Image (cartoon, rainbow, N blue to C red):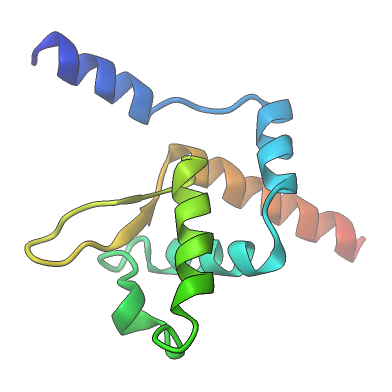
Length: 110
């Protein structure tokens, strides 16, 4: 493994501290969170392919693209090429967001 791959590997495993995670979460609207949840549900099932998995994707493409781009820019999801498909998967930071969302849900229920 060369130095470039080592550096990229360490960046992929980067985790946010609690303050950064909460700040980035606060920038996500309900629609983006719903999109994130769709990716999380499909993570262990070959990822989420937007055009095949989302029923109204074509008619609402702009708002879906905006949400997915935002989630990807924040590092919560990533695209992995699988043949000619490019599904979305959650990242290490995405797993942190899952935990944060679950904690929020538990706090609201109590």
